[in-house]
Length: 466
Ligand code: SF4
Image 1 (cartoon, rainbow, N blue to C red):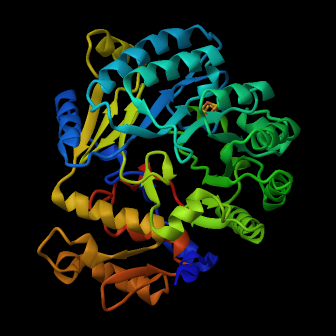
Image 2 (cartoon, helix red, strand yellow):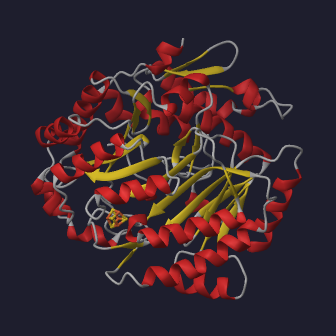
């Protein structure tokens, strides 16, 4: 059964047909549905409630470090491009205040089992600045020392020296993620990200040598001047030092929403057909090299904890993607970061000035958020199960309700019938949806059937699969 679930089959015709725009479902509903009437008061109440349940969950902390040395033209992240390293000191002053405020909200015996520095470019910070940040976190939260803890940082290989990796290990990080995107010089030129392959691979090898686990590499397909031959070369090079995990993102060209992308010429982009071939090549490459397909755009070595978590049913999905630490309350710190506590989401303001102003007044800079209804909770369960395991039992998902799947999801069943006919999934007599090997690539389209918020008219905000 498990072996069947982990199989994937690449069916270009089916992908063309179901390649809809859909959220990536790192949350349900997706962040673009958060509401402005959700305030700091609601977030604080959610934190109090989360402490009061009989066994409060562990914590996961995310820190957004928004600064970057230079601008990558494809980038859709919330960032500030600057060469003035001193701006990070000012940001850290405020971030430390927020750490204190947030730390005061959660019972101090709630262990932090997951911690992630993302951005932007976290390694824009000097080692002393990172140390200062972690010391402050240590003062206000109970940091796990278990080998299973997941303390990770995103690395920009263009600016990180080999010896910095050792310092990060000493500071307690046990996982890293390297931004690579593509090794082809012409592609790097077009996206304004020159990153020699040799230096990146040397860094990757060094990270392995000094004991980092679950090393992740980010690639992007669909970038200007990419072809399946060039992407092949990138993969060939990367496989000389294979990482434990790979994320192969689809580049979504949305220059109206993300102004840096205006520097990328549409005529240089691979066609949808070429992108499909690149994706097919990539999937073939990675599965032949022994990687397990985790979901959407994530692959992992079979011995990696992510692959294990998928097999033993403990995989989760959160704002950082797939996670081995399910059930944590997530606390996001820094501009634009998102918290997920109990049944609510809360997002900080995206700009520095209002963040500084709120923090100065001893307030959390909550900008918007969302309180889930009982129906949202059911749909979130269904979508997370599908995203993580390609299957869901609707009876279990509805356990808290008096309804049967046949009545509660009557409309969804009608839509799913066509997907059943097309071989994307099956539904058994016990109301278990099982996504087929060829349906796994289209999981977002399947999840979208259960999403009452991504109504027609809003789809342009989301990317396609290819
Ligand atoms: S891709 Fe990373 S390094 Fe490049 S601009 Fe975006 S956040 Fe900064």
